[in-house]
Length: 400
Image 1 (cartoon, rainbow, N blue to C red):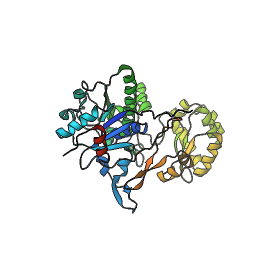
Image 2: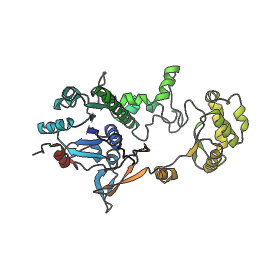
Image 3: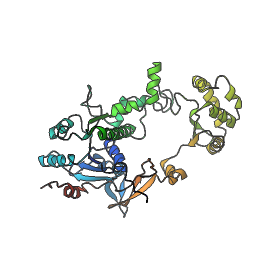
Image 4: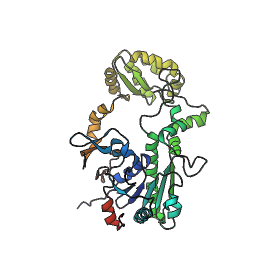
């Protein structure tokens, strides 16, 4: 008889005092893994992102609902409870929930929860098993600790915009932010990993701890090789458009019709690429024979390749490169992405029943377990949808 296995975080309960993106993305990851996430929202407005639209989810008559697409993107599998923690009654309710939870996640400014007795130092002795994760702009220490932080400003302050976009001397050159809030997303991911590690450590010690995760630290960490390029060489990285600072050719090429990406990852692939271009001699040229030489001599090599790539269409090159195993691909818009056969096969576009929209779309979690698959249990909750349920479940005193 096959034993039914539970979700990885089944039995773990998380109190979510976060809002906007980094915190909710973290807690959605944990909810997808089976944790019971109770999202605390302020009366009346709730999470800021509920109003970040349009677009909003449509009802079955095609009219806007109150649920923004932004909010829906990071809040599935959670329960929403309205509590006003600015009142003594609200604090008492929150403390009762803390007593029932394994993890608390918050993204208030440093010290912001102290006035309510909900900061880590106020809770750690009473709840020694509690894992408390604080997500802030700059961290709990340092001269900027008290400053607010937002993804866009951190992309600038943390260096990403100095290495993203075309060179200043080219048309359209200058600082460029990423098309999605990558700093928030990566911070949420680091926070998820930290919480999982703290849960594992608690299995051994029996004790919780404080996790300090900041947008700035996470942002700098995600610059990976660019950090080390600077640390090792002392040369400040610059914007290189769609080219790679350490690998050549690894960039966008313009064909006679359309654009494509060619991502040559080793010398064998380079020689295969040269063969497709009808220039096999480039693969043996001492100036280009290794990636080191190609990177040093990119200003010689790339214009030669660009001239040949312009002779045929994008689809011609994609078919030819696929035959010889050179990584390449088109640049697609999101409608094309979701129509791609691989994306469809992986069921990346999911839907969940929704009380206002009938159905609510959601992007699948990219993790695929062989025995304990991700479960899409709940739509992103309406504001306070589970307040009464949670009050009854935990014996909380309702508001009067």
